[in-house]
Length: 618
Image (tube, rainbow, N blue to C red):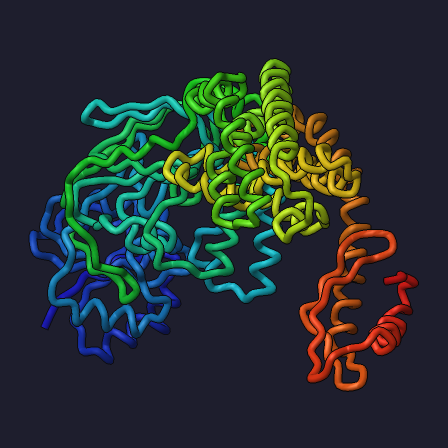
């Protein structure tokens, strides 16, 4: 039978007498009671001694260093003021359960111990502001309380500001970056957030772990917090982009100014933090809630690639955390170079415009969908439109000027080619491919907006750039341009108006949506972008009015077609009804009958179809 020394505070005799002592006796455990003030007896413990500690966190910090490197095994009972120890070692809040766990433990863990500025750390060091949405408490809240908790954290974020700090590891790796805070812990086995995102943390691997919280915006944090609080996506072991991960034997963290920090919840201030580990100095009996899984890897980790650097640091530290991401200019310099090149008219661009318009015009006359799709893929108009949206967003007038010039030249070349081919080709009749580009509706604006979002995202993410061909097909810029040229050649205002409206809808919709997408991705602040976005929005709203009227017109046409399709007269059935935009409306339809239709019967059939609630005449 084991023999334990039970260490407690002098003012806790009552709970010892009424609760703990009877439980130990009932388990037939041999023990001696020692007051925390009897330091000489504690320091005289022999090697192999087993100790049960019933103390507050403050007293535990005082006692544990006395037991280091003495082959002494330590178990913990839940004390009313033991918070950090309970979290760190997974101690049960029930006395009987904790005692059973200590008595039945076959193999204690030989644990490392973390120190910050020579002060022992039971659980965690928090430098600056670290959110509590990752805590175990937040995961257990009800849905309503999670919502309340969520918005209370949002309120806190509004006034938060980045600190500048330098992080150095024992092996010489270092970074100067900025962030809201840093959380350092010796192991993450009992920390909910670290446990579900870091799979190589143990209590005795000789390494400490630092998570650098460095969001570029409130939106970035909300997106991750929402998933963490409400979607319960705890199987995802990937850290969010706004958190850096450092694993090392020791760390030196230096801030640009004195900052609040907490060691095990106790608030202090400092600007320099020396963190070190004393390796395998004490045997710990982990609690019933301690998660023992982990990979005892001693490989140093320095994942800081996504943290702010250079210009981004200055922007994030000069004012409170913005709502949307805002990258530093140095971080998207490569994308800007690509967009600046694409904004300029080149012989390659004009050549592709001519070829794609020729292909589109021939495909439209041939009523060939594959040929028209080929023209969409070949068309280069997306190249200057995306730079135009970036220019609008960042008020870069040179980029806007170059992009508008390129788009104007491309449209003029395309119109000229479409007009010339329409004169040459002898076909002067409508077909479905031509008519499809003459009735734009609010739905086409929706397509343009979604395509603009996809285009901006594809440009900003090199790994999805191959999707640009799909964006070009979806938005179809060149076919309406070709139809506009056909309308000019035929002198048909209805065709010219409808197709040119579709072309303008696509251009403005893509520009606005791309600009907003770039803003969400952090390429500009809203303060800088609002003037350009407001002007673009006004243009889109102005275009939406005729598109809405057109949508209403098409809805009425569909109702007319449905009514005619259900109509029969003297065993004559009507099918394949198409309404052609005209004043009065034209109808094309197929009549099915077993007998020939004479002029009188056909006239009565037409009379039956003439009057509709919309007032249109057919």
